[in-house]
Length: 104
Image 1: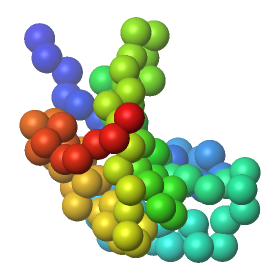
Image 2 (image 1 turned 135 degrees about the vertical axis):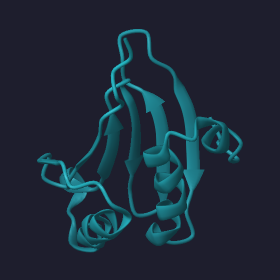
Image 3 (image 1 turned 90 degrees about the vertical axis):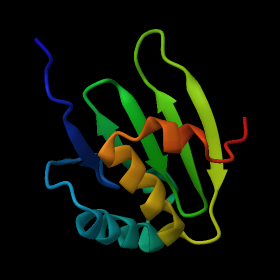
């Protein structure tokens, strides 16, 4: 029996957002422009403990489980460049995600 993969967002204040769409994520990313140092990222997380942490200038892909791994960091020209990365994550396309130029 397989369980369906769940995906959710975490906003700049740490609140979970269950409405998962690229439009909603774009709204959350817009909040980063006025964020302070303590509230400087938005996350896209799934039930398999994978996490995309998006800040104004980078995206971190990692598994936050007990034996998790950090895949790496992508530098962004603009925070909007995170949307295609998030689209792959939301779709569960980890092959496309891993093919991106992550740096350690």
